Amino acid sequence: MQTEKSAQGSADRDDEPDAIDAKIAEWQPILVDIDPVTEGIVQRIEKLAKRLKRSMVETLAEHGLKHEEWTVIAVLRKAGEPYRVSAGQLAQHVEISSGAMTNRLDRLEASGLVRRVPDPNDRRGVLVELTPKGLDAWVSSVHVQGGKEKLITAVLDDGEREQLHRLLRRLTRSASSDC
Image (cartoon, rainbow, N blue to C red; front, side, top):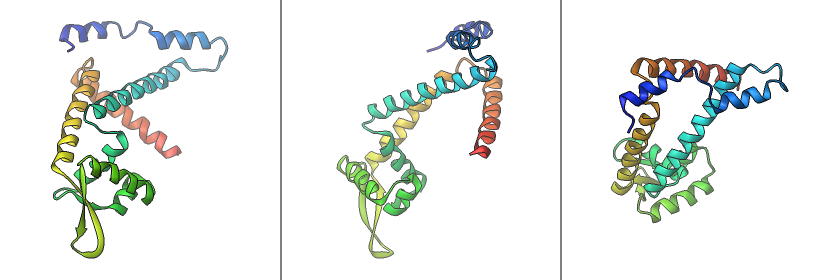
């Protein structure tokens, strides 16, 4: 666990060059038009994204889940009690084909995380329902991952986290408008 003193120690080193700065410096003589600040921002976001993804994969594995299964469980959880959604709606939410959703649901059902139940409003329809085991796996994994993410941001004080949050929101909005 990071202490206040170690967090302060890293704040004292914010202006010291790191490995990313060294890589950028190596490329600057070759790519003279490169903006080192922009490149530093991009490289650091990429590095953090990789670290966060690796952390999430580890957390989900600890809970017997894969990310694609976790996303299905998340849609069911978000639906609210009784945590039921049609397979078609699930496929639409996670943007996969109905065939791929069937395979995913088969695995989740075999693991006891979801079950298929008759749709009370459609005799031919089937709903997918989150089981208590599935709900527990989702809640536990979210709490564990949230703790890991909080540790990553612990080097920033509350004001710095809020500022970074606002700045990243602005960057994300800008990037989204270009896509």
